[in-house]
Image (cartoon, rainbow, N blue to C red):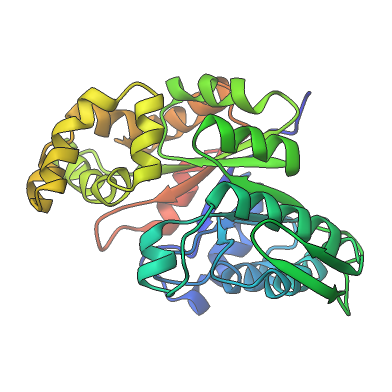
Length: 321
């Protein structure tokens, strides 16, 4: 299945207040970017930056990567998605996923139960609700009675699911339009593609640290990686990808309460696999390597020291750069 080559950026951008990003976002399409995708952790929510981008950059496809399936009720998630789909008809992708126990339980006081089943049920509900159907049903993880969108979108958004391991990747391929993954190298893409098949769009956030100081780039990368790779789902993902033994010292130190030591124990080769750094031309070529390996949509997340000229980095990482 042939798809239009895509090249995305993560919003909101570092170092700029959200309201100050209009000119940068408006110029993305002219540089060759096709997509803008949000994230949601403990900063901006997943939807507000895209609402702004829908008006600032009418050429871009917009997507959430991701909105958690636990922290918004099914009907609220459908309403929010319908609003964005109305603002950006035909160019919005609702990406959902489980997020992590820390985000769901510790920060939002919601039980993190049955993640596979919850993801499946939310996708099935959303497919029906966003098509304008009246939904009454008892799913395995929740029940809905008599919900219908008052303003169903004329063009329902595509659906995407965050997926790291084979079972969830196959669920994404079966129940949604795309699989979203995270923290992988170009060499890892074929394993994910094999599970997704070729009828499913494959999207991944690619972390780019545009500095030539190797030690600084690795230090920035390690800080981020420590927070992610110690999450059970990511630990299992990298076990599956073959990094289990390389990451064992990190997991042992983390379990012992040595957070600093755990980060230091991540091998250089793992950092170099998962974080792109160097001059902008090299970084752009490394992003392209993901596409050559089978990724449909790389979504660049810029991770950089304070004071970085983010607009210059965006220009330098553009596919037309």
